[in-house]
Amino acid sequence: MIRVVVADDQALIRGSFTVLVDSEPDLTVVGEAATGAEAVAVTLEQRPDVVLMDVRMPEMDGIEATRRIKDVSRVLVVTMFDLDAYVYDALRAGASGFLLKDTPPADLLAAVRVVAQGEALLAPAVTRRLIEEFTRAPVLPRVKGLNGVTEREKEVLMLIARGLSNNEIAAHLQVSLATVKTHITRLLAKLEARDRAQLVIAAYESGLVAAAG
Image 1: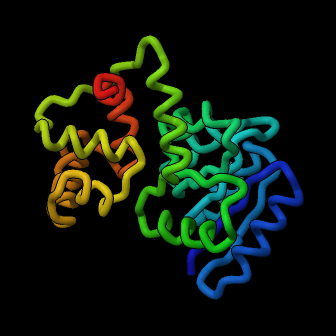
Image 2: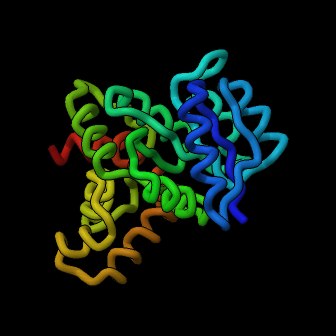
């Protein structure tokens, strides 16, 4: 059973997500929160597998709440297109993925399951908007370099940051899916990244995305 906490300051959205999640036999909501502080408290108490986290909430925003619980539960941030500026901060805070608030119910449920299994989920629509935003920035932070990363691995990293799936990367580079998975495994090890979301951060902070145009 996948245990979920739903955090959103809008009662209607919070209630809708709760009813949807509880309708599935393999999912259950173990707590709700209307503020960031409540989200932290409920998560530390219940230790769910996944937290559905809104960004804008009173007392404490979803970014800070994510930062405080990232080592306890995996966080799936729920955002809007007009809140894309927060997505980068959410990644840095330790979020494992994003959903748009207009995501179809079946996709939301699938996303919860994907994140619960330890995978990162980056909706291509969000990721592409995000990369457009940060390639316009005059200076990108360069926290972590790409020492030891091969040119082919840099290509794979750049495509991950653009929101391509493994199958799309394989088709773009004209290599097998197994080869792509091998490159990603090596990137995770070399960049000491936990998941695909952190690889996107590495692409931004190294300047690779801007350098690639």
